[in-house]
Image (cartoon, rainbow, N blue to C red; front, side, top):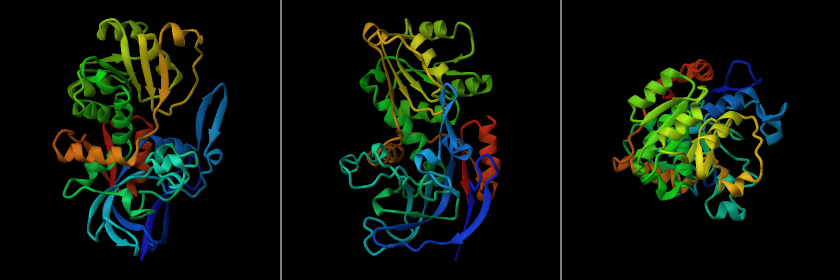
Length: 353
């Protein structure tokens, strides 16, 4: 039996159609037939093969230990079709969303169920191991297959990255979300997911910042309190006015030097900026501002397995409404990736068989 995949074989070049053998699950492994695979903005960085560190410096995929050919796709939903003899909690025909952010499984970080912060983190699906731009995916351990029942896999697949990423990041603000507005940089697909998760957490108001007027309009229609042009000369003042004196919470889904700086400039004393975006760049800050303004800039990297399970539970309970998705055939993987790269996508794109 063959496994048709669409792979990065050369950075910056079109994805290549490859045909591999379908892997045979052993031990605690599970073979999943892909029914939905999200196309995520971080896939663009993997396709390009580099990250911008600012000042002309770059980090390459080889620096991270990632080798080509690479089958991307870390937002995976599918049907269990085979499993190893040691697999537990799964059954043939079970529909699941796959947790992809896998560590070594043995270090203290992994043993406390924070594999997404594993210092080695060399098993992530769609990054180090073959992912969802394929007909079949081999999942290293059965516990990573989260049962979704009869929920729509195309709507659930994005929870594995955009969902769990925004959920984990927003949780870092705590109960302040319920009483104060949060400012969110970026109104694309990740922004729409952040808005839905914010509502599910009982958030008060969300104010978005984006350069694209179409995305600003779409996010307001989706329920945002306001959307500000991040390129406006008075963008920081607009943020302060919209938040009633300055933001205490900024979620940066872009991660550019300019967006982090704008979040700080639009913030008040005690502002906390949580960065998840990988756009790249750098910031220069007087260190005395950290104590004098009691401010914080911290990163948040995806989320853990328990948080994905919690998210699926929020959807099951009706508290989290899935964001709209556009379905495209697996063989359109390259076109879908290029549309996302060129800013032609509003919401999320999901590949289907």
